[in-house]
Amino acid sequence: MKKTILIVEDEDILREIIKDYFINEGHEVLEAADGKDALLLFRENEVHLIILDIMLPELDGWTVCRRIRQTSNVPIIMLTARIDEDDTLLGFELGADDYVTKPYSPPILIARAKRLLDSRYRKKEAFDHHLSIGGISVHYPSRTVTVDGENVKLTYTEFEILTYLMQNQGIVITREQLIVKIWGYEYVGDDRTVNTHIRNLRSKLNDKSKLIKTIVRTGYKFEDNE
Ligand code: CA
Image 1 (spheres, protein in one colour):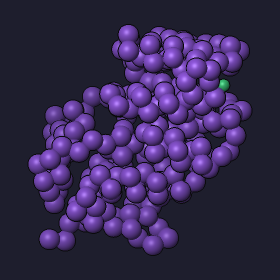
Image 2: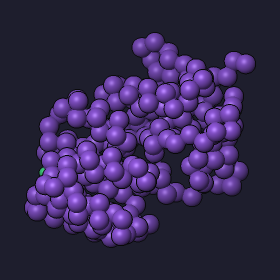
Image 3: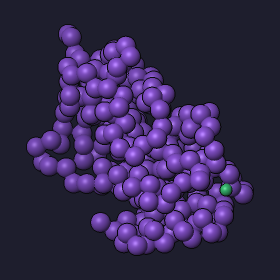
Image 4: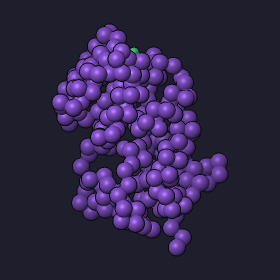
């Protein structure tokens, strides 16, 4: 599955290392050393995944992420310089799908990227194209969600969480299960990451947010009681 990966990183050596890994995986790589170039390359090419550093010349990673999200749901992995909770949460609020803390191991970054690419671009079987419960409808091939017939725009990760909960209707899903399902076993983030995505997801579902129930100290359950 050859994909185009846009690597946005101003440190040449780091960018080269990541680039080599992705090329070895059989992907095409585009490189940008600043935020402006990143946006330009993104507009001019069909990009399937973005590796985005935060500290960049011209425009920082936050701004790049925000601008891209205005028009696209392309998976974005952010690179944060240190373990900074605020950075991570801000990244998710802006619509990043995952983050990796520097210094990171390239194989871990590749594994995360692979997981996002697989779940995003894998072909779905015809029989599970569509799911509808309690006024929320999901169409997998187009990744569209409607609430009482109105379109709702979800980020990639919010869509994955919602569909996973809906597919397991009536069953308690732990935060760990969600993390493994969406980011994989090698994930090192904590529960607050999941909480933030759930909060954002609920705010987009309006009245229907009550279908996602919080199970104290455990996780979440999708349930339609009506
Ligand atoms: Ca940097």
